[in-house]
Length: 116
Length: 115
Image (cartoon, rainbow over all chains, first blue to last red; front, side, top):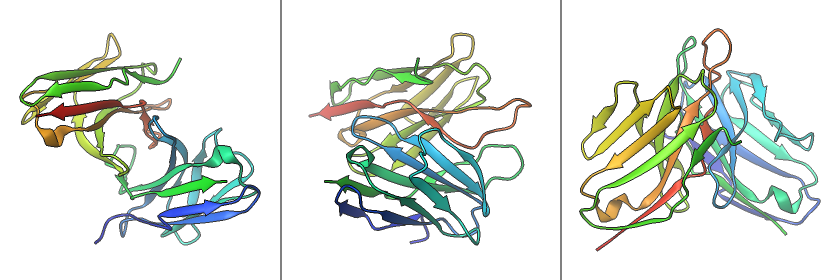
């Protein structure tokens, strides 16, 4: 399967713990996006990378959240000191975007986080 | 005001029915518009792009009204397999006309097609 993959698919943690999620985009896709989706809502943008550069961060991304894409391939999203409000599905997407045009984003299956 | 607003439904329709979903967006400079489909507990997948002149893909027709900042999706001859959440999606545009890249989603409209 050459689609976007995410690991783990499910994570249950206790409040106050740190968690890290990984996303492997489609090979050679230069853009990688993180979104968060809570029940009954559409996905909300968190941040995105073009290659290894983090180009935009949403106001939703508090200082407890950090994302990296060190080599321009896979990305990690870390949440420190988790809170119950962090419980959500964390979706990763990638696209091959050239210039200023929009290109389709392909989503991974998501990581479902439950904070107890 | 939310950037993208949809009627959350749910819509419950019999097989063969025609159903229409509406969506409004607030950023008048937006250039790209889409409908995504999301099955229960799955990731969103692109259903179709929406073009200014309107476009059709089989049983699905999308329309865009830039003056009213309004997007619609029409599904004809509904199938059981059309049951899903339909997400209205906008790609905001920054000054200069370039794409931000991020997508802004509506909350989704739930469709259930029953026998």
